[in-house]
Structures are given as C-alpha cells and as structure tokens.
Image 1: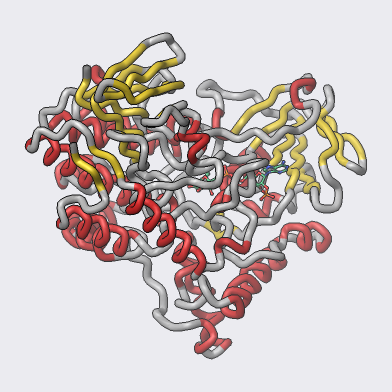
Image 2: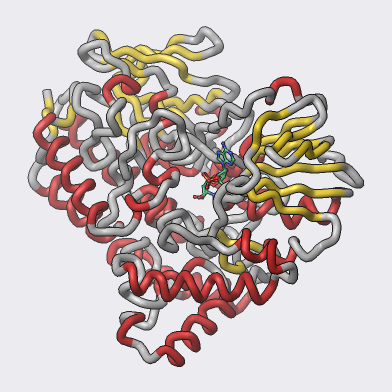
Length: 525
Ligand code: N01
C-alpha cells in the first residue's frame, strides 16, 4: 500500500508528488495523458496561450528552479508551458513515479485506506489520496443533435491532436466563443478557406499585446523573486495587480477613459482591476463594459457583425474575461463569417455541416470550443465513494460541499488540490497550487509524526465553509450571470458559485489559522 496516491500529473500533481517524495512518503501518481502537463498537455489548439504573464505563471517555491527557466514571451504559448512542466519533471526525477495512460474511474475507502480502480484494470491501494485533477479538465460536449452523423472531422480545442491538422483551404466551423474559441479563431482564419464562427454569447475580450520578453525583464523578475514570494501571500490574486486604487464612479469621466486607454494599451486582464468598484457596483461595471463595447465597434467594420460581437446583458467580469490576439479584426476578413446563435440557433449537426434556423453551413471541419464541466466534473468523474458508500457525484448533486476546498466530510484521507471552495481560477492558479501543496504536505507530515492514520473534515466545519463561500459570492456580481462559474453551461448541474471569492491572501490566512489551531475542523484518528 502506498502512503499516498496522487491523481493527475499537471502542475499540481507534479509539485505534490515531488514534495511528498522529499518528505519521505511512498507515493505514486496516475495520469490519463501520455505525458505530464495537464491542461497544457491537452489544450494544444493553435493559439493556446496563458492569460497570466509567464514570469508569474511559474513555480516560485524553489529559487533555483525559478532561475533555471527563461520564458521567451510575455504570455507563453502552450508548447512552451508544456516544456516547462516537462523541465520540472526532469529536474525532480518524477517520470518513474507516474503511471501514464491510466484514468482512475473508481475508489472506495475501506480498511483504513483507499482502493482505487483504473480503466486499465489496475487496482491501487493507498492510505491517502491527493487529487490534482484541475479545475477545467473535464471536457463538456453539449448534446448537439446529429453530432455523430457529421461526415467531416470533429476537433475539440481541449483535445487537439498533437500531430499537425491540415486546414489549408478547408471550410471550418467553430462553436464556442469563450477563451478557447477566441484564441483559436484568429489562428484558424490564417489557414482555413472559409471560417464560420457560431456564437451563442458575445464575450468581453481584451488584447493580450503579447511580445518577446527582454533579458532585462527576465533579470528583473529574478531580482524581484523575494517580492514575488511576499505577493503570493499578501495579494488577492497571488501576484500584484496594479490599478488606480480609485473608484470608477468617483473618477472624472475623461480621466477614467484615459486610465482605461492606458490599461488597454498595456493589454491583459489587469484592466478589470483599474478601478476598485467595477466588480461589485453595477453602475461602475456598466462604465467598464461600455468602454469594451466601444473598442469592438472601433475595430469591426460591418455594423451588423459589430452589433452581434458587442457583449450585453451581463456584467463584465462575471464570465471569465478573454484575452485575444486579433480576435475582432478577424471578422473583417472576407472569408470569416459570424453566426449569431441568439438570432439563428443551431438545430442540428448534419452529415455535411451545421444546420441553423436559417440554413445549412457546409463544413469540412467542426471545432468544438464548448468548454468544461468546470470545478467539480473532474472530481465527480473519479467515481470515489465515501465512508457511507455514496459517491462524490451523489453527495454534490446540489452543489459542491467541501472544507477549505481541500477536503470533503465523509471522504476520509482525501485531499482535493484546487478543489471547489478554494480560490481556483479567481487567483493565479500556480500560487493556489503551491499554497495547497505546502499546506496539505504539512498536515500529512504532522499526521505521520503523530501516528494518525485517518484525517477527515468534520461536517460542521464544512457547513460553515460552504456558507462562507456562498456569502462571499453573494457580495460579488458573479452569480448574476450564466457561466461555468455557476455551472450554468452543463445541463442539469446545480447552480452554485463554487470558488472562494475572498482572495488568495484571505484564503491563505484562514488556512494558516486552521493549521495554527491544530487543524481545526478536522478529525484525526
Ligand atoms: O470554455 P467556456 P473555454 N451551443 O465555457 C459555448 C480557461 N482557459 O474552453 O457563453 C452553443 O468559457 C459557450 O456559450 P455561452 C479559462 O479559465 C484559459 O473557452 O455558454 N454554444 C461559450 O462561448 C476559461 O474561462 C485560456 O452562451 C455553446 C463556449 O462554448 C476556461 O478555460 C484559454 C454551447 C464555452 O466557453 C474555459 O474556456 C482557454 C451550446 N450548446 C481556456 N455550449 C487562457 O489562459 C457551450 N457553448 C487564455
């Protein structure tokens, strides 16, 4: 029996595997993919790129590691981030400790440990299980009637083939205009003979202004390493985001636009933090949203297309802000068409293409950029059953319930890195991962020292946490919008805003307090 089984070999899985091994635990990781990297292994679509700056989207827990890697661009692309994950696995000698091509599909807690079963038939015994399955890894394919009958090629952004895809001159359709769709569309337009973009909801998107990093910038990041460690503890996102510190509604309108122009010119998501009130005050939010709409209108030449691309009906920021590289400009190209599904909904996928209410769009390739069963899907799909035999899927039917996002009452000896109820995608996920790994490893080390063989979240502590997460969400504008943040993109999923919205700094302080009080809210046996 392993001391600990780790599920997943993305950034969280690799880090926890390494830290546990350093502490002398016997442990092993299981991974569906044929390699490490998680999100960055699977999402190989053209244009896939991180929306957090590379110098912050890096492990920080080891200075030598931080200095060992030279990012080439301000926002790294998928191939480079995947190489970074491989670099980490190489440096730490992790490859022999991971079984690839193996998906955990079931698990029961029995005889003081977990028995996991895999799709390969393998059975794994481990005292503890740490899941590192990601927030955005369970692919969700909407039930488009006729999808199986399509005679061309169906590609998913989230499962893009590693080998090159021949698109030159072909008729390509893309369903979905979230972060993935908005990134892939400009790239597909460079090759496709014809490109049809099927949009259900127009999204807010900001230009990335990606560019090569200079050596001076890389050196400055290394020189600022200690400051980054401090920021990981003391900032809301785990890295500094510099706004004006003023409320939009208390700023002179001319000055307000000038500030937003500066942020727009810099590029990236930090623009939403320009003013302090846009995340909570609908009137301030409306000012920011209108600024974005004006930017779309300024770029897109056809007024009807511009109207369809202009987002409306929900506050900016309540769906994840997208970051693009020439997305709106793409719609000025003669071979690119937008289909507004609000006016012209999809009726079915046919052998030849996609039929909407107004007619059939003949396609050779259909790209699905339709998103994920976010936050919970990757966990519920593990088929884990707790102490009373009920599955996580049953227990979470009305929404996820966890303690700190890291443990679930009734599921002893299970820790869920970046689980629902932690900050997840509301912070720099690498900073959240490093925090969770450190915190869980400390707990496991203490448990071992005390001869503890069972650790479990107490129901009362969990209820208190769930209420706190809900209360914090209620202070934001997020719950007002249909998005994966509230599970609205998956038919039948409970509508619950899953992330902890209080900021990574506050979250860490709470976790520190829990640990300082002898892991308050946990039962040790
Ligand atoms: O998924 P999404 P994503 N008919 O759920 C549409 C991270 N990420 O893969 O908005 C028609 O955001 C859906 O429409 P609607 C990042 O956290 C990061 O793009 O539900 N359309 C939407 O347009 C991101 O937020 C990066 O009306 C349907 C799209 O599909 C998260 O992953 C890059 C439909 C899904 O958008 C997920 O992004 C990529 C239907 N039945 C991803 N069902 C970066 O770092 C869904 N849609 C930059």
